[in-house]
View 1 (tube, one colour):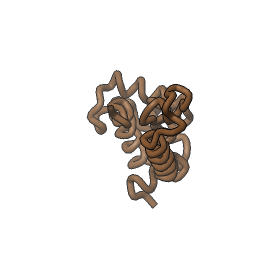
View 2: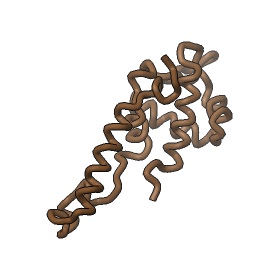
View 3: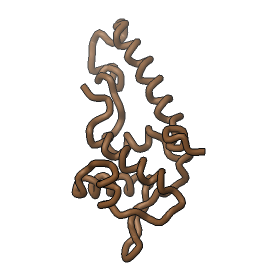
Length: 135
């Protein structure tokens, strides 16, 4: 089980390219794809999802491309992950305790719920400026 799926990893690479260029001119999907070692077609799909989530914005025409929609310190890993793959979840019993009849007395479920909360908080508190050591 992957907590962070492959497409999310690719999206994080694309966003890292945008952070490195923050404050500069927009970057084309092709350039981001090359820099992140992602196919251009997949980069375009991922950038569309990130745009729909208002993490990136695009501009058309000569000199157009993609850029962050907000400063790096206002974008968390959690936001990017949710935009691409939805919620991070260890097990169904964590998000839906009624799915398991053992849930009320299950020590494993309680520990997974604790880990789930810790990881979510960590992802929410890790903004792009912290991740890429931008100040």
